[in-house]
View 1 (cartoon, rainbow, N blue to C red):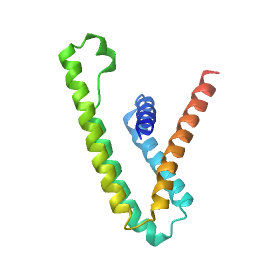
View 2: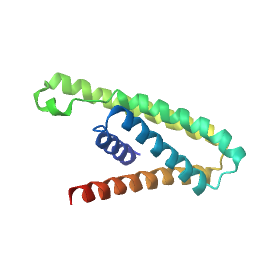
View 3: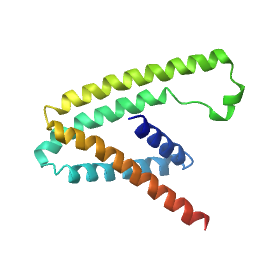
View 4: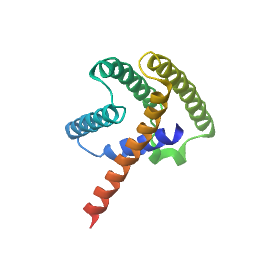
Length: 146
């Protein structure tokens, strides 16, 4: 789970250099690709998708809001005090705890829609999608440099 978060954080950080409109357009395109990927790979019926996506989207919104609390000015990290660093560590742990709670709620809600096997597959598909996006980003970055 932490690896997924790290991957998402790195990916979103890399995208932060885009202009605001381009960033929103890009984020929407990625979201649409993710919806298509997960829907296809889970072989969801339209009825299942209608139940699944509102639950999953709420989780994503909650998770995104939670991780906004972790935003740090990385350029000035060397100048922070030990007490500030201690506060940051406490906040990281609080975010991790709260993320566990929302993930547990997601799984509980999804059990009403999907089988346990499908929920486990969803977890794998999220990781696969994130790896795919990072690889695509790396390929574009490499192509741009050359």
